[in-house]
Image (cartoon, rainbow, N blue to C red):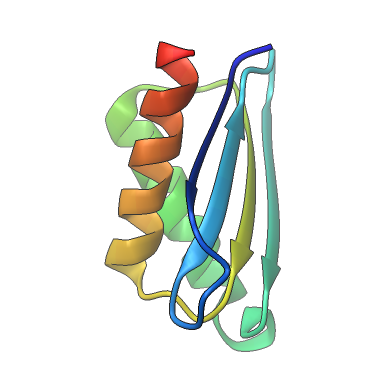
Length: 84
């Protein structure tokens, strides 16, 4: 199974796991989900749209990462998944 992982569980970072799937699945765990959950989802969806990915399983464990960090971790995880 193709899997890509990027990031860490350090403060202000996130751990992103991308896995091949036949449908779009997004799971978000975040210490700030109550306040920024919708924004995290928007960043994930816009990044996947830029990549042209419509079917993938994404799990994000966020520790207060900023948008650009989430985006870069997702890009790295998706590329690592494709390369595996």
